[in-house]
Image (cartoon, rainbow, N blue to C red; front, side, top):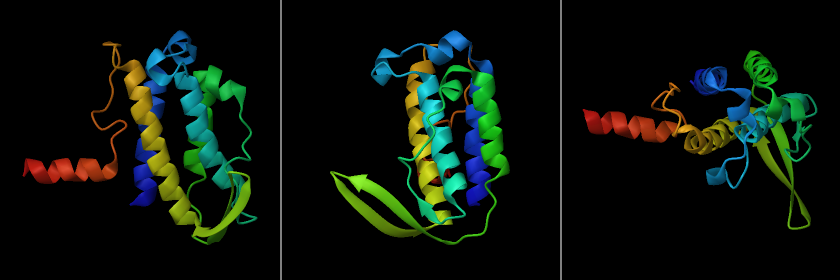
Length: 162
């Protein structure tokens, strides 16, 4: 269920990107502290890329990202990067060390591939919720009602509806 959920969430993002103009994508949004939808999309994409690129060595450091300016300024490049992430998700679970510099101290935490995929899914949904704030004023966009909504919230709403 994890991989289909990630693919669905990333496809929702791709669907939104297909509807945006470049101006929509690169314009600073006051509600996002003047960040752009492109910057949030790049951040989402590069977290998944980081996990993919560091999978073989089994040491993940999310601060060690490329920060590709083209992903945040060109929706076509962003959609291609997301498609590549989706294509490369299906890997065997394995133990991984997460490296993180926190307040000047280098932390090393044991984790695994599936746990990091789940982290990236939740991280993606969080950023999609922020992106949703930036596009709500645009009545021409068709956004899935669950775009930017945590999977646990979706399940809770289903239970309440019964």
